[in-house]
Image 1 (cartoon, rainbow, N blue to C red):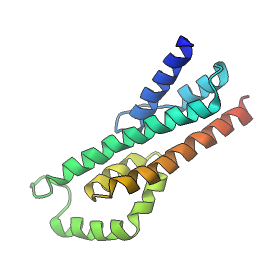
Image 2 (image 1 turned 90 degrees about the vertical axis):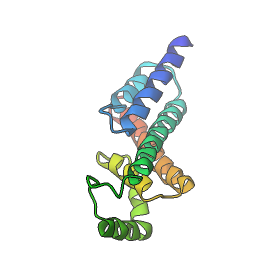
Image 3 (image 1 turned 90 degrees about the horizontal axis):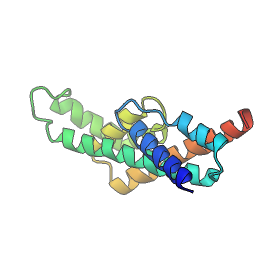
Length: 146
């Protein structure tokens, strides 16, 4: 029981870290726990999804904070570029959050903060993407290695 709790805690931390700009990976830990423990797959998916989604919220918060510096000389976009990007993102970019699970997905979550995406919408789309990712990973792990 204690080993399973530690495994789930480690998975949560790895999934959380993997969603931030830090160089973490959660897939190997997820697959290892799935293959080597008695932890139910639904619990692995739930814990990894929550950790990964919360890690993306950190990126969102970084984006919100970064936007505060939009008038600084070193800010990477001009005011006109940022306004144009915000208009585009408001119309189409929100759906990029469904790719937040992908290798460049962390950038989408930071941009969502810069663009002031409503938090409820951000969390909803990111949670769908992250949960889908772990469901597919669980299926691939059981189909390939199990």
